[in-house]
Amino acid sequence: MTAPMLLLNPGPVTLSERVRRSLLQTDLCHREDEFFDLQDEIRARLLDVYALDAARWAPVLLTGSGTAAVEAMVSSLPNADARLLVIENGVYGERMSAIAARHGIAHETLHNTWGAPIDIDAVIARLDAATSAMPAITHVCIVHHETTTGRLNPVGAVGAACKARGIGVLLDAVSSFGAETIDFAGWGITAAAATANKCLHGVPGACFVIAARDALAQAAPRTLYLDLPAWARAQDARGTPFTPSVHAYYGLLEALREFDDEGGLAARHARYAALAEQARAGLAAMGIDGLLDVRDASVVLRAYRLPADIDYPLLHDTLKRHGFVIYAGQGALSKAMFRISTMGAITAPDIDRLLDAVRTLRGGERTPA
Ligand SMILES: *Cc1c(COP(=O)(O)O)cnc(C)c1O
Image (cartoon, rainbow, N blue to C red):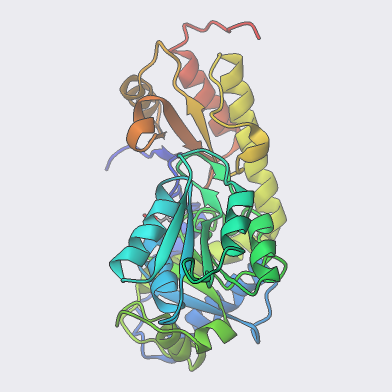
C-alpha cells in the first residue's frame, strides 16, 4: 500500500475514518427497500444543509462526478425556447458553455479572463437588452466558487437581478455546496449542481442537483441518462432509473451525518475559514502571496503565486515527499500559481506541517513583511 497522503487538491478529499469505514457495509440491491431508505435519508439531509422545503425543492441524486450534475442541470432544465447567458471567469464557467454548445442549446457567453471579477453591470445590461436583434435571456448560468482561482463569484447580486426580471439561475455549486452561503430563495436559484466529494466530504461517484420543482415540471431533457426530471420522478417514488453507485451513496450518507454532528454549514464554513487563514498567514510570512484579495476568495480553496525561485514541480514533489498533494494552476496559470484546498479531514496541525515542509524550500528564512 502507498503511504497515506493528505489531499489538498479540490476533490476528491481526504476522508475521515468514519466515512471510510462506512464503505464497508453490506451489498445492497438497488431495487430493495434498504436502498431506498438510504436514498431517502441522503435526499432529506441534502435539503437540510440549506434548510430547504421539500415541497418546493427536489434533491436529485445522480451517479457520476460533479460535471454529470452540471450537465444534467444545464441539458435538462432549459426548454426548447430557452436562451442561456453563461458567465465565465475560469475553467468551470467555460465548461458550462461547452455543455450548452454540445447540446445545441441557444446561449451566449459573458467572458472574463480567469480570475477576473464578474462585471455585474455588463450582466444587467445584457439582461435588459432584449430586442429583435438580441433575443431575451431565459437563464443565467454561473459558477459560485470558481475553483480555477478560488474566486467566490457574486451570485447574490447576479441572482437578485435575474429574480427581478423573472430569469432563471443555473448554479454550479460543485465546490461551494456545504461550505458557503447559498440563499436559494433570495438569489432566485432555479437549480444548483454539486457533488459528494468536495465540501461534503464523501467519496467520488455520487453527485446531485437541487432543483426547483416548478422548473422540473417545465424541463426539456436532451439525453436519456442525464434526464433530471426522470431521476427526480423515480426518486420521489422510492425508485431509481439506473444502477446507482451504492457504496458512494453509503459514503455520502455517513458524510452528511458527520456534517450534521459537526455543526452543519456554519461550522464547516468556520473550520475552512480558519484553515485557509492559517495557510495564508504562514505562506505570507515566507513571502508567498495569494492570487486574490481574501475578500474575493472562498474559504474552500486559495490560489497562491509561485515565488520566482520555486517552480511548481519542485514545490509539488517536495510537499508530496512530506505527505501532501497540492494542486497546480490550470492552463496558462500552471506556471504562475498553485492551489491549496482545505476541504476534507484536514486539521490545524496538518497545516502547520505543510508550512514546515514549504519552509524547507525557503531555507528557513522569513522574508520581512
Ligand atoms: C470540481 C468541480 C466541478 C466538477 O468536476 P468533476 O471532476 O466532474 O467532479 C465542476 N465545477 C466546479 C466549480 C468544480 O470545482
